[in-house]
Picture: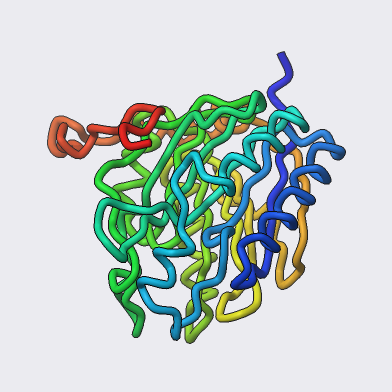
Length: 284
């Protein structure tokens, strides 16, 4: 069985119009399918750009459930193209005027196999996502895909290394981080440094599709398990495809066995922190 697989990464400038963004997303899915990619990764805020002046109620009104038109249309596109999709959306929460920042894995048969709701809200550096968003409550168990075992994080989550370590310990060979990384002083340096660090310390691929334009920095990246940047999209919009070799994960983890060399007799990840949601969300 070949260990190499082709993946697609989208760098996009989402508008405030979710229908336009959905149409563009489906076009990217078809393009990636035509290029024989096994899975396509979209950035955070794929559904729509939420400007500072948008109220929490306006975002709530724009948000959908997981069986709404946005996710359902992407499920149909996945099935039509026989391709997996990592997508993001604003999902209505149980809290009035607060939405989840949600990432989903859709399998090539068009079924949602994993749901992850962003844990760490970006209440930092002059932003306060908690004014509009509700935090998730659990790390999602990695999803088995043709590309490998995918552990999901979203944007600000990459600043919390314990999360990526938990995902790696639970079997993730790819850490996917759909993002909308706000540009600013040292922000691109932070982005590049942390993506490389998460890859190196876990011996995992990191796939980080990003928003570009509006207030976002672009630089969507794929980093291999030894920290080599194998794709950097700069400020280019669109979809890129790249071959990744999952044997590389095994090779790096054997030669640089960081997961094995941990002193779990001295320190360990708390068992409560290791609890994860099942692949299917308990709140559909």
